Amino acid sequence: MLTQEQQIFEQIKKANNILITFSHVWNGDSVASALALFLFLKKLGKNAEIVAEKPKTNNSSPTAGKLFSFLPAFSEIKNELENLRKFIISLDITNAKVSQIKYKLEKSSLNFIISPKEGFFTEDDITSSTGGFKYDLIITLDAPDLESLGKIYDNDTEFFYKTPIINIDHQSDNEEFGQINLTELNAVSVSEILFSLFESYSRELIDEDIATCLLTGIIYKTRSFKTPNITPHTLNATSELISMGARREEIVNMLYRSRTLNVLKLWGRVLARLTGSLDNKLVWSTLSHIDFLKTEAEEDDLSEVIDELIVNIPLAKIIAIIYERVPENDISGNGESPIRNSNEASNSDADQRGIISNGVNNQKFNYPTTSLFVYSVKNIDSMELIREYNPTGDRRLAQAEINKPLGAAEKEIIGLIEEKLKKLPF
Image (cartoon, rainbow, N blue to C red; front, side, top):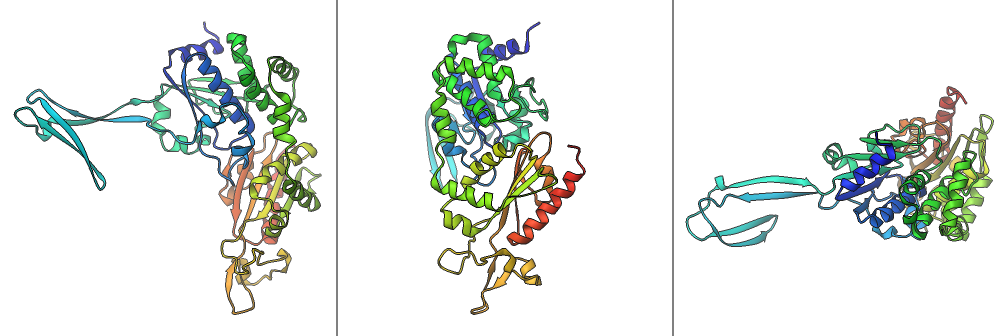
């Protein structure tokens, strides 16, 4: 009987075109492991492509697009499935042979002009059909379920149900939706699982670029070896990858030693307002629109701030960042938030709807939208903690918006999370 690893490579050998994909919530392990697998399959002489939904600034690891661009073959990642299936128009030429074929584009119609040698064609001679799918094997990485693939799955669900799937993950909540499911709960990352898989097949195929991608995934998931779930196998895999040429200094420099002054300023403002409750199992901070203006930082920079909080507050189970979005209808003309201090807002009905007057010509405008990131550790579901706000993301990092001023939103959000955490066993 074949082992699971042997089954995986048997499927790869049979496949002509392989799709590699991962969760629409981009993270370093997802991206790095996908690139490592892509490079490994290329060495096996396989046609492979990486496709993952484009990361959204407020819905994923916000800096994914630029943070991991140093990795080999990063530019190969596509954001949508192209030419997934062919549409075929068939013409029965039993009664008439073709002399000439032309086509003409008229507004929204593509017209084919077919001239017969003799006789004529009728509507009954024409049929249409769809061809097979472009890919004959799907490999998903770091995706707990098909829905986590986002639009890549939502737009072509039939493709995922009719094509064999190899599902590789290390998360306990994985739904094992593949025909082959390789889920290693003791591994700290998918990259660690792939290293064992590659090594068992052919150690010689792991070159410096593949090793660098795999080590990036491990370093990212362990916050540069600062998380408590590191195992001897993780350390051994790291040592082996470095001996194979993995560029550790480059990885660490790009991920952790390239903080901009703007990010450091934003980090300082987050620390200044850091608050905790439930014995610091819940930790949160707030940022106003003015904080972003004064530090010249962007929402994209928040993922780096969250990473620092995760590393430096190991006892925290939930970390939340609550912040004001840039207002679209700022009437001040100088980019300043209409509310200098969220506590200045009154409790009138208008304020509760997020509308205030500027006191000049009785002009009214909206408060900046309040957004939040909620990061959870262990087996706590971030999406469930804030489901009342229709969050996006996944169980580890969820994001949502609430149409209330910052102070009122903070009170409501934290109260909601506290009530839910009190019901959970720690």
